[in-house]
Image 1 (cartoon, rainbow, N blue to C red):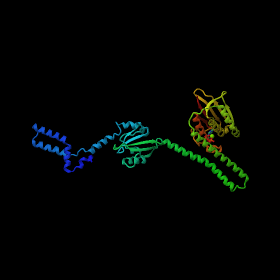
Image 2: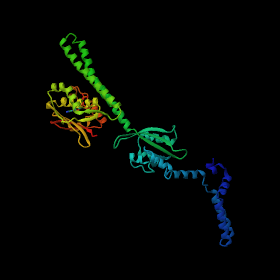
Image 3: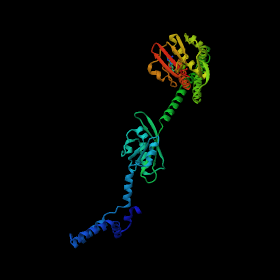
Length: 421
Ligand SMILES: Nc1ncnc2c1ncn2[C@@H]1O[C@H](COP(=O)(O)OP(=O)(O)OP(=O)(O)O)[C@@H](O)[C@H]1O
Ligand SMILES: [Mg+2]
């Protein structure tokens, strides 16, 4: 009611109220006109007419209502948080934060917002900068005052890189005419989610292939090959290979998940690297002989001491040597070089083969789960594509680094560099 005070009073009382409201300018004009009369400058009739004119203007002119004054206060608020302690608060928020007014115009954007979205000048229409229907809907809802704040929605930016945000919006206090949007970056979570679902899809695919082959042979054995002893033997042999592959895959998956669950505490078992690798070579002697590969050792004379997890490091060298034998078998030799640490660097082990090598574009991706240069070659070698992912995981836990170098046609070298003491 107060805000339209003038309009709540009827007819003549409105004019009276306006006159009362303008009493100070009226008195001042009357005094001025009277003074001019006393000085004999203006005739009394003109004096009376001038006074009536001033009074009429004062009475009829619309009064500066409380509503207008309120609008002016709001107009000042379009400056947003400037000069207000809330501005520092907004700056201190690590997530992108944008304040906008009831016209949907940006009034403030904190540094995180400008870093994430670039220029966000005050006075820009929010919906021109953030054009997705979801965000436009969110802003419209906030401005209309529908829904229970905080309202939230998703917002994605595709360029220069894909980023996902969860946006929450709410009015800023009561009656300020300002609203706030806070953007929470969800890109990393989305990436992990995608990796997880890719991983499950890959794992199921890898399991489905041998399973389908086993199911097919079971059907043949129960049907057309029921009485064929030779075929039965051959099929059972294939089925055994396929079950072996499935078991291997499950072992690898369990190994990875166990590694992921382990804490990052420093591994502390004292080991002799030469003895550890000799153990692995013993276990692989059979595979090497079968593949026609001879293994050469280049070891230093003194023991190479290391602190680490024995079982995990055995897994590392088992996979590197097995890969060298399997994929580099036409090179006929594999060289394992062990070097003691020098200066800040710790011991170093290089497994080198003389096979076909690895095309450069594949090298950075080899440690990804299920990544294989040639899926068919790897499958015939009973590979699952998880070996190097496990290696990378274990080495990270040991603070060690894996470097892969290769020249096509000349072979590949996998080097493990352990940290110094
Ligand atoms: N010494 C090598 N020479 C050529 N290619 C290699 C060599 N080592 C690895 N690769 C390539 O890298 C891929 C990934 O190796 P990784 O050890 O992760 O998996 P895998 O050997 O296929 O399966 P798994 O180790 O689980 O049995 C292999 O499939 C192969 O294509
Ligand atoms: Mg392997």
